[in-house]
Length: 525
Image (cartoon, rainbow, N blue to C red):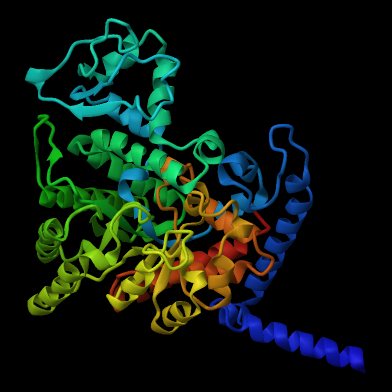
């Protein structure tokens, strides 16, 4: 009897603990098909843990589920579980930076089609400086009257700083086309050696991370590339089961380069291109009877937190003007950049509070969707961004990695419905955690905090499918299962900035697609 009583008490305690999870209710009400699918997923996960993730690999000494993504990526892609997740309808993508979303090789291909795009370097390219952060390519479109001539940028005769047409520079490079491509690709991405060896601290990896944006903006901030880039991002998202997107766009530069090579394309024109491209993709899908696969995208206006409060005023005013002209596009406002070295939210309190008052006066709503707590700190200014974000009324929190250290804030997020945009692979590559089993996400899930899984900067990290992030989460916890996946997808819609009617419509579409997905598990993988 004593053992029976103990086991009963144990079951009660486990149930009490599990009841705090956000997926608890969903799991308790799984349909028969969902129960069967959940069983299949758990069986496959265990089988692959015992086989694929227990095998010996000469080049990977410590293999395990949820390991460092860049090391384990090719193993992930061989699993049945990943193939299942590729087919999963994932709802919305709520945390992604638009200028880091398209495969770097495709971006280079698009760029090579533009004769206006030029490249230059600070010194001739050599095999020794190929991977140096001090020898990054710089790109820029030029007017026809300023086009350069074909030169070998790897020649000792190359004059540093000389603009060379990109396509011609690639073809003329004496180190070879493949080496040229490797140089460009390496400047746009983070590789395993950098993440886990040469730049394996938060400070070092952020230096590499930010350098990729300084390179890519020279290619992307050119309207012909911008339009194609947006289109490719939308199409790739649809193929990965993403129905809706809230993309962060950095409006720091007040103008983009136009087809004529002049820096004259305004923020309004950026949005015109975005809107037109979105409409075109939706029309194409509708013509293929796939209109339910992509319901649209909105924009989170961002700028960088190195501005002064006075400089920020211009961007806040610009955001309001864009919201007034494009109410269907502007979803919210955020400040981005390395929280560890740039200004905390409290530095901007006066302009941010005025921004809220102006919205009330104008009868518009631009919710804050702040990055906060993307840090290992506990009680430092980065960690305390969480407190200011909540007090300022943020509707969601980007990353919130340090939130697990604050039970009061977790309780507020749970009770007030402040969702976290959790980016598992980003957090790991940027060295906030060594692997997914070490990630604080289970703390959040076990405390009922709503979570929307996101990919952050997939072109840089290599997680070009949100499926990778879902995979890392699923294999890193014995508790997580089909209900966890379902609730994460649903919450990405529920905690979007869509209005109530749109949310209901999108959720209804998602449920139909989810039912088809559930039926397919175990039968077509």
